[in-house]
Image (cartoon, rainbow, N blue to C red; front, side, top):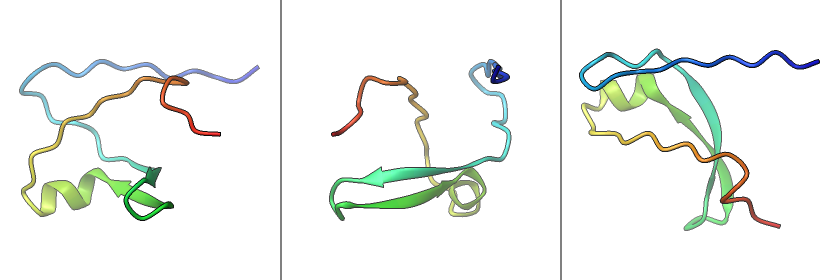
Length: 57
């Protein structure tokens, strides 16, 4: 059975560093998102996760 990891982050807390594969619709290809790169670029970031709802076929 797969192990599930859950965590909650509250407003104002630092987000743990992570990387994930993403789909970039403007390029029509997959890419990589890195929280470390976002922080280094001093970019505002909104994290929105909604599993299995915005899937493409």
